[in-house]
Image (cartoon, rainbow, N blue to C red; front, side):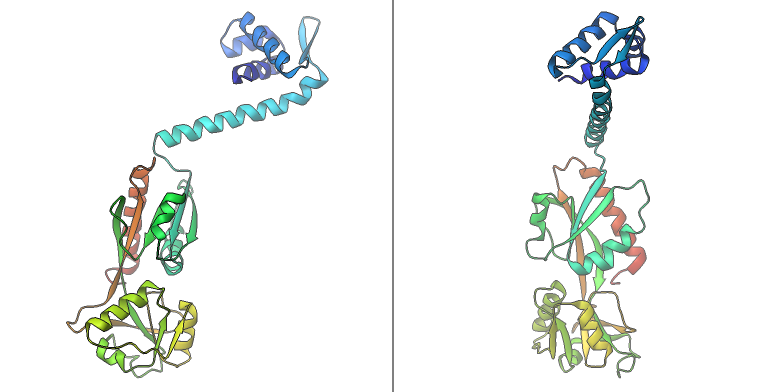
Length: 294
């Protein structure tokens, strides 16, 4: 079935005559007649009856007409979407990030988007293998590990790794803490699947210090809740909750521990330029929200 024939049918039905329908379409009357006859043969129904020099829709024609209108609208939607793809635009964008990054970075960022921005979907994925989601339909991945070199990428944030303590903790009046002091503390740490935990363990090992947590958690929120109850010091990159006080963690050379966030996308993505602009906007957002290291 050709869309041209369907369009002729709809225009003639609206205009009431073949002549008027042909004028609307900007084609000759014989061509319109042939298109409608061809459509009737394909559908095996009669669409019009002639009455007093005008065309009147048959019962079958009245049933088919709304479906034909819907088909033309859908065809136009396809054309519009294809033009957007060709121009590198995105109507929808699928973002993928670990849970902490999703909740503390991407969700607040998306909240600043306008109505003309792509409609976002944000999925959670574990750090290990997260960039493989770009080959399974994700548009933009934001993660605390560097992507493989075959992806386009940029650094969008450098977030602090914090030691959180309750307001009643002896350290609560301080601004920072070093690794040696933390080694003797009651540590409430995330499980080793979290990149923040790996950064902390690596820094402790580099300083010649062992890591013996009092407890380990699969949820940053629960870790903070336990710290807020006065049971120890939790170490993570998440935004503070429950009134916890953040302390910057410094290595033996006095440098603050941080976690870099990378944004990555497929180099051959039809909207690669748009994704690059989104990554730049995310970098601007994190600088304004956190500054360097927060």
